[in-house]
Length: 333
Image (tube, rainbow, N blue to C red):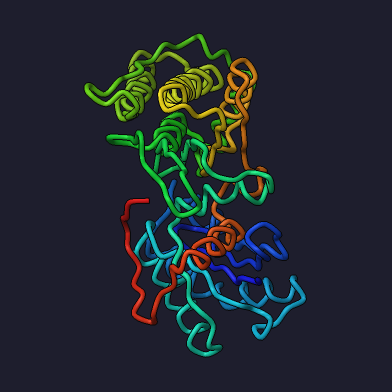
C-alpha cells in the first residue's frame, strides 16, 4: 500500500510517500527556519502563509521522487492535530482537496502518534507493546504503546515541555532559533556540573514532569550574572541545563518501565535528536539489559514519512475521515 502523507503542524512543510508503513519511497521537507530566526521562534501567521506557498510543490516533488503518480497512491494521510491551528488547516484542506479530486481515502493522523511511528521506519522489527518517551518542543509524554493505535499516557508535563525549556533557555543565553539544536551544539565542550538546577517532582504523580522552574532558574542565572557584570560560560550553562532536563526524563521513564514491566523502550519527537539524551538512554538501557529504539536523526524532527507510517496503521484500524475533517490545536494522543 502506497500512502501519500502530508505534515504541516508547525514550521515544516513536508510530504512523503511510504509503502506499507515501513518503507520510505520519498521524504521532502521545506524548512522555514530562515524566516523565523529573526523573531527567535515560530510566528504562526508566517508559518501558515509559507505552508500555503510551499505545499503544492513539496507534494509534487514527493510523488516525483517516488517515481509515482496520484493514480499509484492508495490513500492520503495528513496530520490534523495537535499543532498550530492555522498551519494544520493548510495541510488538512490540501489533503481533503486531493482526496476529493482523486477519490482516495483520507486518513487523519495524530502528530504525536506519528512521532512514535518514526521508530517503525528506523527499526522495522519494532512492534508494540513498548514504552515510549515522546519529547518535543510542545509535548513531553511517557506513553505505553499497547498497539499501533492504542496508547496510554503514564506521565506528562504539567507546564513547559522539555523542548520548550531548552529552547527558551537557549534564547536567554543569546543563542539563535532553533534554540534546542544550537544549545546541544555549543554545550558539547561544556562542563555539566558547573551549575546546579532544581529537578522538580510533581506531588502525587510519580511520572509527571515540570520544567517551568528549570527554565526560570536558567533565566535568573543569566540575569543575575548580567546585573553583577559577570560573564556566563554558555557551554557550561547549556551543558548543565541539558543534563538536568535529561536526568528528569530518564529518571521518570525508567521508573515507569520498571513498574509497568516494559523492557523495550523507544524515544520519539524532536528532542530525541539531542545527543546527551541519546547517549544517556543508550547507557541506561545497556546497564539494565533493555532494548532501546530511537529514530534516525533525519526522522526525529517533523517530517511526513512518520505521518505515512502511522497512517498505514490507522487505515488498517479503519480510522478514515470524511471531507468534513477539521484540524485541532490540542488533542489527547
